[in-house]
Amino acid sequence: MNHSYTVIAYFIYLPIALLLTWYVAQTLFRNGLVFMRDIFFGREEIAKATNSLFRIGFYLLNIGFALYILQIYDTLNGVQGIIEVLSSKIGGFSIYLGIMLFFNLFLFFRGKKVAKQKHDEHMAMQPLATPNK
Amino acid sequence: MNYNISAYIVYLILTGFIIVFVGKLFYRNGRVFILGLMKDDAARTDHLNNILLVAYYLFNIGYAFVKLSFWQSIENLAKLVSSIANNMSVLIFILASTHYLNMVLIWYLSRSKKSPLTIKSFQS
Image 1 (cartoon, rainbow over the protein chains, first blue to last red):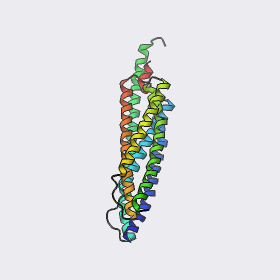
Image 2: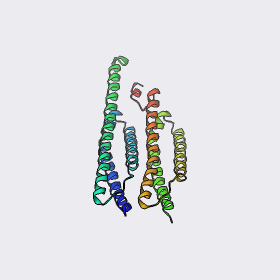
Image 3: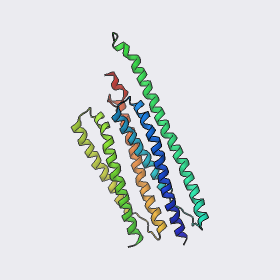
Image 4: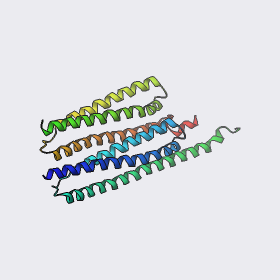
């Protein structure tokens, strides 16, 4: 009978973890395209491709992690056990997602900074190359 | 039908779907980068992209099948769900790590050459 509680816990955990991942990725990468346009200076095709490659990587890493921590090792005794086990799992997964979100944001900001530096250097070089324009 | 065989069927359907879906996304989005590295030679880019896609399918589907022979024996429904999730997570982690490795590789290649992917192309 104890196994049925574990199965119920799995089927509560899975949709919550997948929906949470989907929601975070959706929020991050809808706004990520703006950063990518800045980094690649309006080359729309490369900006979109990079954004969706980052999105695929984000989904793979986080859904992989969500499935990896799914297994429940203790035997559950009733609804209380389900709630206690799930709270630690979903809470831990949320914290992990938050860290990954900030890591991706850090990458975006860093890319933007490097691109801006290179652009500025290039603009500074420009008058030397063509003095009469 | 015992638990192990049903686990194999569910696992193969889910991983096959993930591998094909992700492969198509890589194929579509990676083309721009190969085109940049190949100096806008469209024919060579498409050849290389097709070869990369086939290599990706062979590697991952082969790995998914090899996993079947190391499957632990399953006694109940809870074990079924957890073992499918565990095996799939390893496969997805391998996909994710190779994907990030490839992105780093593209970044390095486009940095070292004067490719149109970087800001250096403004100078030409």
